[in-house]
Image: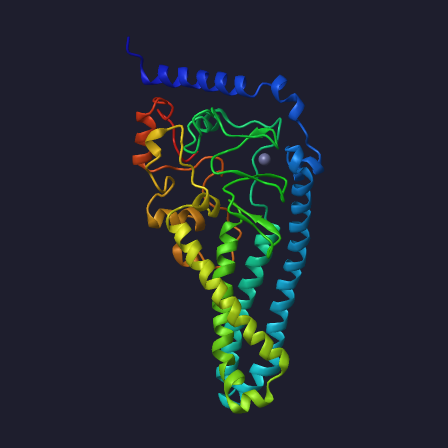
Length: 349
Ligand SMILES: [Zn+2]
């Protein structure tokens, strides 16, 4: 006998709860619950505890060192502008062009520092901890996560002992499951994920622009006979440093531009799952891609595009637990054995 869409959805919900609770019953997980700082840092594999702990502590230490080093280098470049470039420009171009260039430089500097600090101090967004619950409509979607392996009913973190929302990965350095995790960045001493990815990309963009700006206006100071005779060693070092950073940022921007336009994270690009529970998805390369413009809006939000690079503390669209899918992917999920789960639901919950 044929059932209605509502009945199917109800049956599916009951099935999801049964599957999930039977897979991760309190009795089964009792021995795995370790919530201390040490265990969050090191994970659960006894053979690799010490290695993981050392790696995590090393990354944290490196993060503090590189975070301060980044601020020191930004300060040094700013200092060299006023001790070496400013006097040269005043002599060569006059006060108005020098002041105009300096105002533009201060704007770039402000955005570099703002995005670096916001990326550093804004948490990437974490999965709910043990004991905290998700709304039922989100629980239903955990059971149709496109990344599920054939034997999974929902993604589960054995370290945190809790559900892993879509696109979430455990970060041993942060000690939690990070929403839409991209990578741990030692230069901002923070994990980059759902809530701070926009700051990270804007930081790359402004750093690339700022070093280009410094190289352009410092060119004659560095390479002309007059400038070379009068420039300081600190300026020469800062100029070479900016050249290196500009090249590195160019490569990073190229990579993250590709990731943003295809709606992927760094982890998803390198670790694409080949054996999915929903076999119809195995041949789709970019599951979460919604089209170029929509993919850009997934990072910078749905506001006016010309405000995307302005300093702002707005959060990205969505809740970070589940993500919208394009129609083609939804249809494949429908065609698979989970038919009914998406009935009457909205992907933008
Ligand atoms: Zn975890």
